[in-house]
Length: 543
Image (cartoon, rainbow, N blue to C red; front, side, top):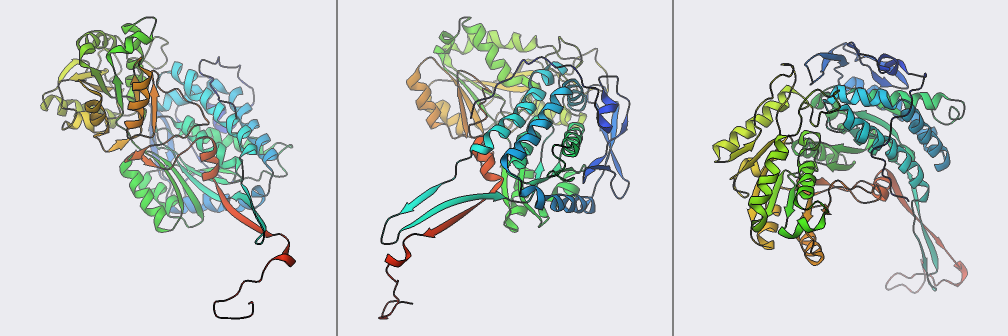
């Protein structure tokens, strides 16, 4: 498998072909409209007719009304997926790959529509959705389409006198449930959809009700591709179904449905615990990618790695803490700096954070858009208040910027020092916003203790020019992923996931493909006539 990196890709020209929702977007100013579920290849409303508002966090305007679905809507989607599972599960890897690659082509042809929709729902700058979210979604589809046919299966030969050949088969699970978060909606949905389809499964997806649009757009593309003559004979309607609504009403029903054979969940730790309990209670497979409170560990010699010295180092650490307004589970929101460098580092970091431009997501100079919602901003502001009560000193940020729409969920990026890395809630609990704390340290053992001293264990980054130290500290960190002298440097072949309260299982590469399939061992005896007959203890004859 080849690694995939496509950040910085230019948006291709728009296609004239559009589905029902895609035609509403089309790169033009968007007026509010109804967003539908997508069940059995067609748009549907909730059976109750109830809806929820989908609000633009940049200005508080209404983007759309979405179905407030319930358990009966989930059951209908599961039934549609189950009807499609039989014929689709009999397809070859080559057939599935052709379909998934076609979906990637359709998405890339509508690149700008997806980028605008993702920004409108989430508040992230359009420049970011163009550079990261949509290119990565296309890459996810293409990567797994190319990888799945090469998924290795084992074969084991047994020697005489019990000669036999064992080989492993992989088969589809059937209907799988995908529950995805609001921070990287399409990016993370395609990360699950692509391997699920490539292993022959059908899908019921529950996106976040805060960022619902691109999930429906993706389902429309799958339905459009499936209806094309090249795929219509083997890609039935109902391959990908989307049900909108609230977690307790839709997500719980999906996780509890006995016809759903596996659940892949990305989201908060508390919700993940409930998902895991429900899935375990009926022995369904579950993959849980949960929260993080990640350490950025900076040693004094790290400045020697970069041509621009300390300035380049600080620039990279700033990105790791505040990309997407800190609303990425991998963000390094706990910054530890070796004491000889600490004062100089803080003097460079604080003004750089303060200079980040918070503003309109459509403005190309904007670094950080609004947070995803007013409610989430209130939660983040609550942690800033807690930090002050704990004795923290706000070096920059901490307030709402002036001159932006009152209905927007804007907040200036915030850097705080003076907190205990052991006892402070603001320094140890997941905030998931544009807030970072910074702490000095003296020894490796000390900083490893700080980094490991939280309930989470998703990732960390280590910055040093000492290779032995890089290996040593990386090994000591109790996390699922470590970056050295870089951050968010992703290879789609590698395992992705955390330990402790950051989740269960791994995604990426073979790990995703194995999760979305069932394993069967087949043992074939060789040379039957020459094999001795097994005997029961105490019996002269074989049995």
